[in-house]
Image (cartoon, rainbow over all chains, first blue to last red):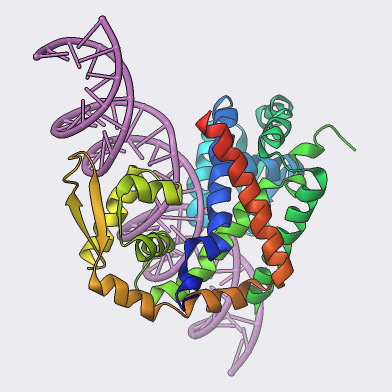
Length: 148
Length: 148
DNA sequence: TTAAATTTGATTGTGTACAATTTAATTGTA
DNA sequence: TACAATTAAATTGTACACAATCAAATTTAA
């Protein structure tokens, strides 16, 4: 029992969180490679599939990403033909991105991906729900801190 | 209820994991800035504080990182004076890194960091343990997959 | 014992992340 | 109305992450 115990890797909660998130995206990679998408591009497409259209700012709020990350990423998705970009007519500062027909077709082709990944994680239904709730509890608390 | 529900962001387990890990390291940043360390440098020092000495390969196994990430990071920690590098005498392929006196002094100065971060996460003891166990369960399963 | 296979760390290239700054557009206010 | 403050994206710079490749050293096996 030392005063340094709190600095041991095994006593950290953040480290398994960090390592686990990386492990998950690493195991997503072979699944996503078939569609020529990275994980971040994939979740960006998820937002687009649901909303059809959104500003860069809105996408950033959904994904906790800023324009420094999203601008090049969105340009790549545009060059792949999955989304289109246009200045907002309401407010010329904003850029509205819209999912294309090709982008919607991609959704059909990717329906099997979450299932394939789920088989990889191997938690029970109950454990998965537990984890889900704990993670959103932390995220919610951070959101609260940040808006203050 | 659509066949596309599995592709909704809110139905993903991976997304809050990814977002939460980023939120945690983001909130670590102001704490670590005072010591001129990044999060990855910080956990690398944790390994060094515990082991005093380890090969690049061993550090990588502890942290789930490869030489592409560790080589430049270790060079930075060396230039800050917290560790030293030397070829292994046993096996000239290996590079052994060793924590310096300055590196050990840093541990004393950083004892307050985990507590400060813990106050930020705001889970009960029980929830934190639950989360810890779930994360290591996933990591353990991935380890199993990977070694096969 | 050598030649092939493996291992270790470094290097290169791509893709995030995110802070900080810049530019253009909009809003608020005196 | 003017003009300061704010906002949205883009840009720039630093630091991971990791795949792929390389070079040097070591191990294995024929």
